[in-house]
Image (tube, rainbow, N blue to C red; front, top):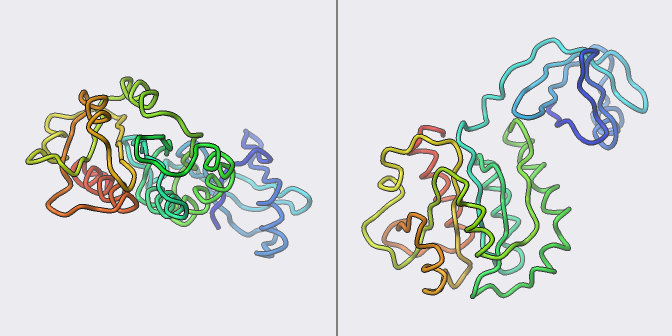
Length: 238
């Protein structure tokens, strides 16, 4: 069984202590017992443990520590323009499964939902990220950040090794071309909302690599994980 080190859990030289909802899940739902094995992930590492004590907290002895095999070596942050309600959940789920490091929702010219309505659901979005990370055996839980502006997002991306913007009006240049000679470990992907990016915003994004995802126009909930899949395939991270 796979768990993440949460706020109520601890990992030290004495072993692993699991508390909170995970402890209740282990004891009440899964009905695990002393001697059963669990894996607890933290910061990209997996701790294979044997349960030694069951109570309000679950204590376990560490038997092995290994680097999580599912984590990509390149950390990709998805800067996703706010989609219409109901689509962001799908974006989180699939991008976390694929290996995104972080998701930052952004306000753009054509976004319809308000930043306030999205930030009110931030806790729920992060729980969804945790669920997707568990399902895909990730080594840590990608953070879903609070909403920021496109301008602030571009400023943040200046500290990355590469930034890529798929754009429906781009021609010729693809993600493969943008990655020619790339050897960094931090990347940013900018994805527009249902209306895409405005020409004003493309000017703001002019220092990123403006690329095409192909001949067909993709929905915003499809574009992010399509770009992520191409990126990881081209860098050998799938």
